[in-house]
Image (cartoon, rainbow, N blue to C red):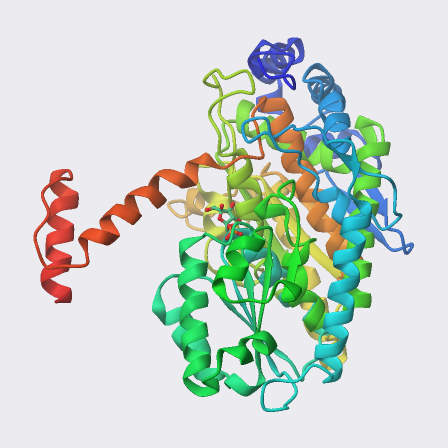
Length: 553
Ligand code: F6P
């Protein structure tokens, strides 16, 4: 068993067995509508308010979930039985809880705005974090003010972040989410896909004289990023000619100084971080440079402070009051007792349109695991399939299945009370908000056969118009989607994911599952260099490759 595992299977925990018994006896039949009718305090009992460092608040309403007092108590016991608090202490002490890669998981040190001593291997990492932040501040101010000039003396107007996975999804999501705070004279682009179309389309929109490329890669060996960065460099040099000009137009965000230098980027134009920052947790690090350039350093600092405030909440609050812990435990409840396979996150906020994509990596790369921290195959279901799209668009596409399908789909809805764009006398915002409230209510309340009949529907149509209801939602209401709020919201999901992983007894911080396909792609890549048919794969793969060779010739 690893140092960080004190039990084998989550199913062996005493509270798991009790939860199973309660689920079988009554839990699966609980009606949230009836629980509300019976308990006027239900909302108060199951909602929690988070207060951010700036005094702003976020309301998490868990009361529409299928739980009662007994189940809530047992879920808290589950966290205790799983030793969540011990693992959390190790996590925040910089211990190597990512034991398969022998790494600490310490992205919290990147948002250590209160400048606490935070050690990895006995060394305080705060000074190094602060020095990179100072470098990013200085650099971003030069670029934004125009003091930093391109090789022909022009101000930078286009920022292109080249990266993939965590070196892309965080920056894309945050720049989109906080666009309201952006310097609109700058345009930001993100190139991630190896599909040449991605970079080709971006290159069509920019000008080498006024473009700054940020090559974002923790390892600086990722095939997609290296290929796209080389394509960008070749494109730039077609016009700039002299490789000395690269210094004004390419910077690197990475942990790998050797590869950065080999690529031709001056090490003084490199913004570093350490291997205790996982890719999917790296938006707080140098990987966030595109965010700083776009929204300014002061706003980035607020983003970090909001994140730090949620860390503080997570480490200091009791389990019963701990918002990310409650969220994660509810996810376990649905996954493992109701057999739910998915987790829907629907932001009622157009600026958050990439939030579900960001959360997909956070959740699914972290908890898509089937071996325990004790090296055994898990005997239960782990990571949920996270998906989502902003509402109200999603209401008009897949919400049908959420309301009337055969599957239970726990959903999170997110709304900002104050819109950044209160146009038409705030009409849009009122309509948006009314949908936020209505969807959660409809999912819970449903519509009975009697109600459908009373509407005068023909008998053969009645069953089609019935809504079973009792479909769980968590409503997250923020005051305004500010940098501080977004920071806290992301960290809510980070520690939600930690909580799930702690109970499932898996290592949420490695990602070996992405390797096999990468290795195969490399060897197949070589076989695509010529027209010779291949025969060393399975029948289907051979046939597909050979057909591709014929059609692409
Ligand atoms: O392939 C998965 C992954 O390793 C992610 O975990 C990571 O965010 C992404 O690739 C990009 O890695 P890098 O930043 O090293 O280029």
